[in-house]
Image 1 (tube, rainbow, N blue to C red):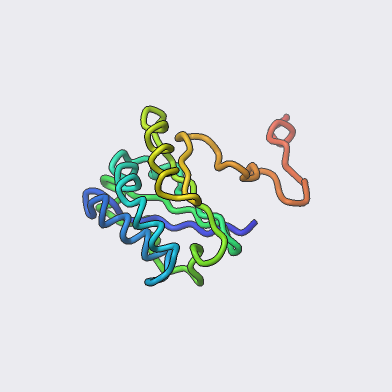
Image 2 (tube, rainbow, N blue to C red):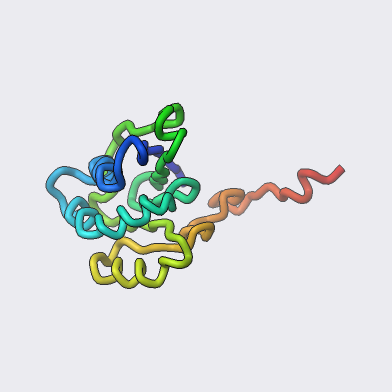
Length: 155
């Protein structure tokens, strides 16, 4: 599986709404269904950005192309912009068949999942720290070869 990561500058440089606009522009063409769907969930997404949920846990987009992971930079990281990676993607991952998983603090998960279900069939939320449903663990490849961490560190 190919993975592409982007790191978007957020607060205090950009507000949550402006950050979501940058993410939407990165992921969706100007006049497509993907853009309309991302715009419908903007309120929920902005709430999650405001809570800094996508700092360490990515917004993940699965599509026919590479998996896209979008992180947000906050505080000093946003101000310095050293880790910023906002360049456009080769294609828009929201064209065709796609899905998105948003990271969410546990205390907000119930209402966020309910609201997203009302707004979108493609966009869901997961608890911070949980893997994206259907994702393979990072240490495994599609061929089943894996490095055993315990064996690797044995003396």
